Length: 308
Image (cartoon, rainbow, N blue to C red; front, side):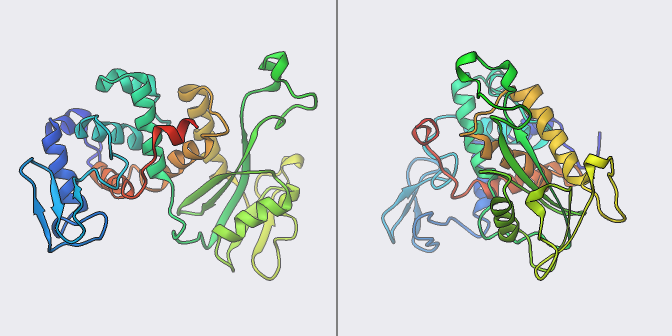
């Protein structure tokens, strides 16, 4: 086993119960002492009689380490949450709610809710740095084949991308990845996303799709490869890096999740990009888990919001 990897048995030994998991989360999120999640006070915070409960005397909030995180108002013990986080950040193609439910002893419905909350934590904040340098661009399409759908649900026209949701991917050479569903592959939708997520002055590599026409100029340097002519490398230009992201994503969709609704697709895409950015196997497992814990703050979502 790699020196940067800890086994599941080791994880259980580190966090055998909810109390050990609580202490770990408090140490990780409150490195310099207990912080009120509402008013951010540190000095006027006192302990409650019940272990793990605190009161902020500045704003009178009673809280725990769960408050203001994806764990809030969940009855599932914290060490089971840590197990789910470990599985999601280390399983290259993800883990199904059915499998997770069996492994931690909860219902499939509860496991699905846990995983959706964890995926919510995977979403990158709007303030995250833009990609820069050499950035590869490509889009893929997620959804079932029209031929396999019930007659009442089939669209009248087309094949290929018809009835599927477009996902735009951007990957720095040797760096980070961003991806998100887009309304269409039109020039307007693709280039709006590019300008929002890539630093001006970067070099962009893509295929010959029409959505990338006109990128080469004042803001970016753009080169492309002509896949329709079986050209996959043009000097430095290629899209092999971002296409490897799609390979993993589609294997996860087909082999683990089987189908993903357009409504929840963005969260699944966030899961895969988070695993690429923060879950790099070169990083120690605990460092990857730490990144997940930090990302859990301020990302609460309710079951009603997910199913509305």
